[in-house]
Image (cartoon, rainbow, N blue to C red; front, side, top):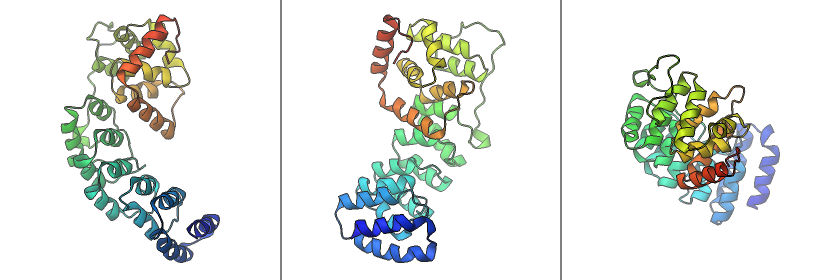
Length: 289
């Protein structure tokens, strides 16, 4: 019965106003509260991105202790009330918090709570999401955490949507300076910020101990995987890779592809990246990965 009513709603949802949605809300809520977890998880997936999904059903699913049920609506549904998201952010466990952190937009009320409770991966995701609003308090809290998290610090350094009093300004270098600075991440970020991408790539090549042509070819590729492997192999943060990707002329990635690159970066270990880069460089393969 739940499957049939859900299918009926989905078939007509685009033409239904709030008044017409209410009967579906009542029926689906009753049915959804009397089925097993697997069926509730399927329902959550099906209605998570429906613009006029039944509000009470969405709320019921969002508060489910099973992440398979709550996750889809916590991450994607626009029908959840802000107060409910605030409550979940303040009470739920790490898996539910990570799901909330994946939302396209987050208010300052929510991010202030997440900063104190979410995992490191969730905080990095929030920092890299320009649509996740950070208050003075929230940003200050993230900076404090970033003192022990180099990846988070790099992402925050490249973030545009920050409170004015916390804006990070890159130090400028003398034009035409040679690449004789410390071979570290700050030097690479500074070069990229100044438009000296070739110098930044040369630094990465020296640290990775691969020919400059390998890094240059990876930068020029249409896909981001080779560049991702190189940046990960030298243990640089996501913020540096993001800045490199964004510096490529005429190759701006859409948000969904950038999120995919971020998740791939997080999943790739430094050791694996190093093995791949060194093996392919030894084989004379400029594709790297």
